[in-house]
Length: 54
Image (cartoon, rainbow, N blue to C red; front, side, top):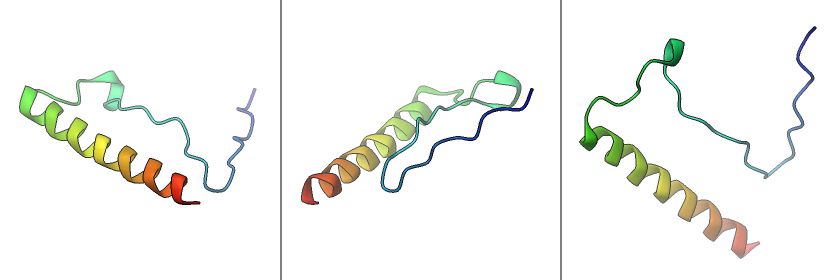
C-alpha cells in the first residue's frame, strides 16, 4: 500500500529527524555532535524570530 501524500503547508516547518544510512551513527565524536546542535539551535532561533515578526 503506498504512503499517503504528506500535507505541506506554506511557512510551516516539517518534522525533521537526523538518521544515518541504514540507521548508522551520524556522529562519531562529541565535537561533531555539538557542532550540529549549535547550528540546529541557531536555525531554530532564527525561525522563531522570523515567525514572531510576522
